[in-house]
Image (cartoon, rainbow, N blue to C red):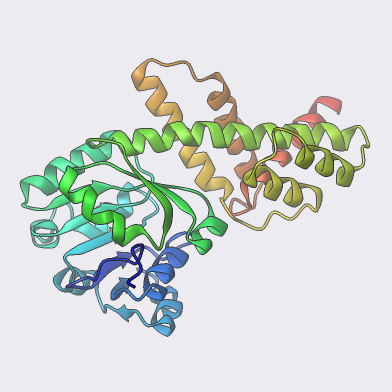
Length: 304
């Protein structure tokens, strides 16, 4: 009996551009699910794990677009997205026309809306598909996806994203998926920052940090995220899952979106300051729980 949850067969390979902390495991999950995938990355060395897993490697971004109808982008920012799409150049219409461009990175809603309009005008299709989760869920194919775009475009992406996301939610028209992602991020960022403050409080009172972790993990606030972050906190293991600079970028996007909508955002305002201070202290690639360093620096400064 056929597996009803198996990804639908693809008539043409899927393109994947952006093989960073999140993009590499996401692309690997597609390949390991048996999907034909072509990858390209500005840093060619990052394509090697995908090539070993069975993906084809395009020599140029243009070559990838010429061979793929659907292209997934997991890029760092708007500038990188514009560069890959050739936005503002003669290459743009060729790369997006007749293609479905799926933007999975976190950019501003205003940027995404404008990009959607330009891709549509050039004869292409555009879907926002930001994901909630960090490196570990990405490796396990347990991300949560949010889609925005034309209903028919969103519908056909469900099977494609099945190896990457445990659940996919349709949010409506662009830029609703990004706005939803930012709303989710507001909770995630303030929660982890609150955990860092709690850990700082416990450590400065000389409490047993193992016992602190056990009590939090046994209580009603425990979650998959908190359990991982508490463990990293008590062992001072700041190996990146969601990096400080990435969280700062996301915090600023939330704050900007809140400001433009006229909503109050006192907690996110505090988070922007704390993650900026942590980044300035060095090690911007450390995991977001390293924001505890900002609390420690403030405490040391006030006590000097």
